[in-house]
Structure formats: structure tokens, C-alpha cells
Image 1 (cartoon, chains in turn purple, green):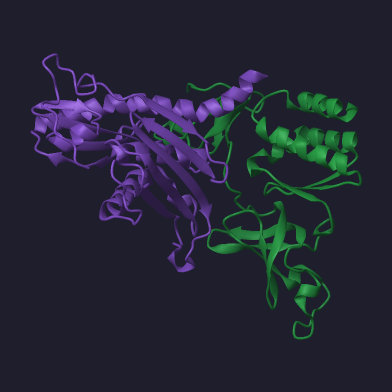
Image 2 (cartoon, one colour; image 1 turned 45 degrees about the vertical axis):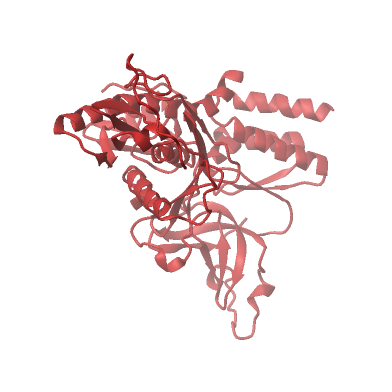
Length: 244
Length: 232
């Protein structure tokens, strides 16, 4: 992925490289229940990111000895498809994908009532069809909707967004270029109606004030994402209701 | 004690339902402090007379409950028991002692002569807790092997709509189409009938109920649907 660095990421009018303002999100579209064979599924478009998630479970644990007597095993697999980036990505799971699978699992797990399903497994498979910065946050959005669509007991949905840094300016929802040439990336995941943070990573240097500001910025966006998640989940059923 | 939701409203996990007061809140909900929240993607039903608000999930796997009647499929024959798939994350066990009251000499009888892999049975759940696999029985009347019919699977949460209020829906389908319906609470239905066209129509009817289970006035609409199809 050799891109020539842009001259600057923010122009004199305060607009970003794709014309957005610093606190503006990319357009988001969510669809629930797109796959017939999975128990639950979701498709998410966040700008140029295209993500599909499938949830299964609760179902029998394979291999059996991994089953837990008091709660469900929760598994998560994040995969980038070979055509999802500029240059072909090897289909072999990379170090990065293994790490992101873990990070996404730990962001979603607090929302699920795992103790309700002992000796079973709940699985989420996430495939990145097209990547453009912030795939982990798009994956968390998709994973949460897929789990809810599968009818699994949850405390809340989980929504996520990244806050980046360009120079000294905090910018919301950074894209691929800003991620590569910017000065910081801080993905944040939250349970929106509870206001609890389930994921907070950061690279780059921040002052304490900036971190607080970033969380506030993310919180606002997460409420918007949550509204879209709810709409996606409800619309499938409300459409039938209205047609009567 | 405000209630934030309306009857027949669709709720998502984490959505606030209300506080318990005059109206009791039950079903798939959890509580933090005084407030109740939905656990699942479900639909709210409010029964004004009984003063009960329930959250019923729209989807999900079947969870065994003692006393439920289920339709199971034999997946393995052991020396003293059968393994039965009951459309749930837990495989059920059907011991020989719950099949016949006659003594069976297991060293001489081949259990697959009684029930073989692939057979469908109507069974009752005798016991189940989350540490042990569910145990079935077919010793009671009306339970046992289902010799023929067409199997349909729907989400188990929608079974009450197939049955209807006091069995109104199911008896209507039986009467109008002249077919027999065997319903398991695990989301499996077996349709037994002579006329293949009517059996097929019964399958279509069940699929229609499945997709419109969360709406009101369903019985009348289904009646119209069957009448229309019977004419052509």
C-alpha cells in the first residue's frame, strides 16, 4: 500500500481531505438479517468500509472439551478478504487479524449475558469486503447488530468510532489516508444507552484534556450510530407491520 | 412507575421498558436499580386485565423446559439410550426405561429395532438443568414415534402464534385443510395429510404465520389466505 502522502490533511478552511469537518462522521448504512443461513447477520457501510458479520449460537461447542460449565464460550473471527485492500492481502490470518479478533471479542463480550447459555458457544464471523481505515469500529457495529439479530440476550448494543489526531486537531472517524499519515488513532467502543466503554485503544500522543475531549466527541457519534443500529434492527419487522 | 413502551412495540437489547408499579414486567428483561430493560430483540405485549407487560423475543434458539412437549430426531443409538436432536444447543437423552415399561434385555435386543437413526418422535422433557443434558420420555399417551408426515421448522418463539388463543389458529387450519398438525414446543411441526396439495398449503400457511407473527389480527388474515388458495 504505497500512497503518496497528501500535502496536508486539513486545508485552510478547516476541511479534511474528503471534505468533512473535523467532527463529521462518514455516511453510515446498516442492514440487519442479510444472510439466510446464519442465525443473525448484519451488513455495515461506513464511508468506504464494507463489512459483513454473521452470528451463530448458542450452539454446541466444537471441540467439546472447550465448553465451559457456567457460561458460553464467545468466539470472534475478523478476516480481511484478499480484495479488500489496494494490494492483494494474503488470505492467511495475519498477526493483525488475530489481534483484532481478540480486541473485537473483548469489546462485544461485556454486552452479552454469557452466563445464560452454559456449555454452548456463541460465534461471530466478521469479513471485511472493503477497507478504508476504521474497520475495527465498523466490525464492532456489525457484530453487535448480528448478535442482536440472532436473538441472543444482551445488556445493550455496542457501537464504536475512532477519533484521530491531525497536528493538534482532534478529528472524528478517520479514513485510511488520515490513519496512515495522521498523528493519532483512538478507537472507542461503548454500550450507548449505558454509557460504558468496552474498548479504548490509542496510538499517538495525547494530553489528558485531549483524551477527555476525544471521548466526548466519540460519545456524540456513538449515539448517532446507535440510532442507526436500532433502526436497522426494527425496520425488518416494522415493514411487515405497515404493509398490512 | 412510568412505562416507556406501547403494546406490540418492537424493542432492542438495552432499551428501557419502564419501572415496575401497577403493571408487572416479566419475560426477557433485566433490572438495574428500579428500571427494567429488554434483553433481546423482541416485541412488547401488554395485558391490561392481568396487569402484565411481557417482552417476547422474535428469534432465538430453543431452550428446554421441564414438561414441554417437543419433536425430536434420533441422531444416535447407544446401548441403553438414544441421543435425540431437539433443535436446541443441548442434545437430549432418551433412556430405554422411558420408552417401554416392559423389561428390555439390552444384551439381546438391538435398540435400533425399536427406534432408529432418523426417526421422529413426539416426546416430553422429564428433567433439565443447565449442568445436565435434558432427559426425554415417550411413555405417556399420545407420545411416541411419528411414522409419517412433513416436518416444518420455525423459530420456537412463534409456536404460540401457530396455536393461537386457546388453540383457535391450529383448529382452524386443521378444519379448513383437513390435515393433522403435530406441534412441538421446540419449533418443529409435523403435518400429516392425505392430499399433497393441502399439505403444501399448510406449509405455506405456517410460513406466512412465521413472517407475520408479531402483528395483530392474524387469524382473520390467515383464514382469508387459505380461502383464497383453496379456490384456485
